[in-house]
Amino acid sequence: MAVFVCAICNISAFLLSAKPCCAYAHAKGPVARNERKISMKHIFTLATVLFVLPFFVASASAQDSYRVKSGDVLQVEVLEDPSINRQVLVTPDGRISLPLAGTVLASGRSVDQVQAEIAGKLAPNFAAPPTVFVSVNSVAAPDPATYSGTSTIDVYVLGEVANAGKVSVSSGTNILQLLAEIGGFSDFAATKRIQLRRKDKSGTEKVYNINYQDILAGQSSIGTTTLASGDVIIVPQRRLFE
Image 1 (cartoon, rainbow, N blue to C red):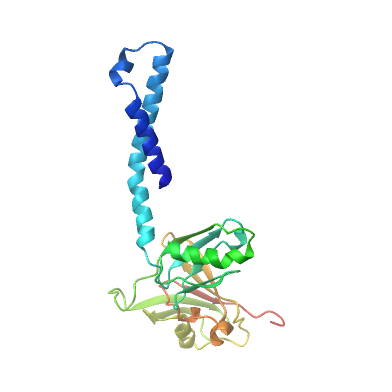
Image 2: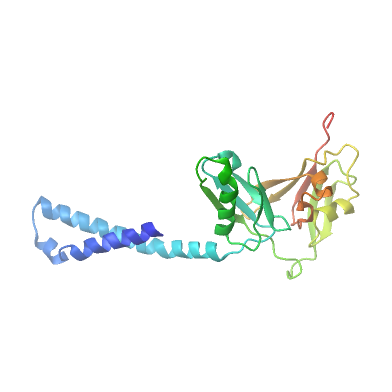
């Protein structure tokens, strides 16, 4: 924002101190031609800035006013350590988990507030305060309690479960309820490596890892994540000695 304001001030100052257009029109020689080129260049730049600025302000305002909620997917990027960069799902208890930062409360807070807490939790791991960027990649589906759409959705379950295939469940069903409905896992299920695959509005598939053992131990609440139409749950086969 400061860059745009500075640009407007500089260009405005130039235009106010510039010669009138009629002076350029009657002036002759290389200097006059150069002055006309510079004047037109600044006028074009000012027009471009004035056109873009409202969109920039609106975007920044929306980002500041939006409050993260459970089911949102956040994009987290750390300039100093790209290995931390990832998309994280806000779990039903309103939290996200990141390497080195641990658990961070996200629900009910602005993106800037989440970003600041992540930076604070990561700071002890870096020689200088890390540069952290957080944005909303996709927002949660409407609450089934207030949504007037279809009463059932289709989800798909693959792998080591009692009854694999397409399953029609009520809107609002969560992952644990789905697993109970299909009869649970087979004896060969790798319950620490379950995947939830979900497509966003652009059609890009996102993969979220689910550790069923952590859910049982009360260390994760991802099992209460509400399913969306088209979700795919994959339960891989257990490896040798796993």
